[in-house]
Length: 277
Image 1 (cartoon, rainbow, N blue to C red):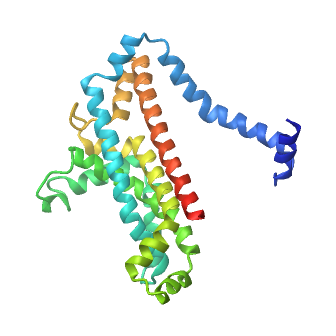
Image 2: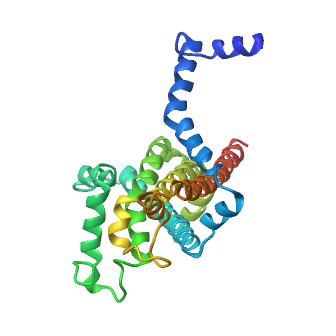
């Protein structure tokens, strides 16, 4: 015990480590642990059959499928195109670059309700974009995917940008002098370095999409079994004063999201360890 305390103090930068740690744990308890534990405690008041009925009804399962499926698809798309956007912003100079860079942060600053209304108007059948599409976007599951892609892109771009800025061009030039093609340089030199940051951005975009509500409810249509997301279903049960049912669904979402994020963090650790070798 004494050795552990001495080791912690030795590597502490801030003075008053014990006090700082106490405030940190207290703050996290009030902001994170107590609200989450309240959801679990409310759910524990239900019997197992009641809990199972609440979280496994066809309507709830359909919302799980849409929420997790659309969130995963949006995060994968953002990981792919977010890498391209971050690469262009870091490696190239072009007119209005600062404006383009600022536009990346627009989903952060824009109220989610405003984003939802704007996307709905754009992708409606008579909208500026929707009128040219051969399929309907607004009020369908595709609209959910579009909204989740919109709000998740900045997480990938802003996570990758600092890593790309620290990646010197001399590394690529050295690979080229050794006979590596551009694809080999990217696959064997650049991408392994970017992998941990890319997984982090993917995890952040995925987690953000799972809990998104404001921008989705306008463009989704909210049709049960078709385009109804799980956060909306939780709100619906709360409005019906079914607090136990709402917390039961929230607990399932929380556990599933935690398991997925834990798996992604394990992949990040594996990627860093592999890069370290």
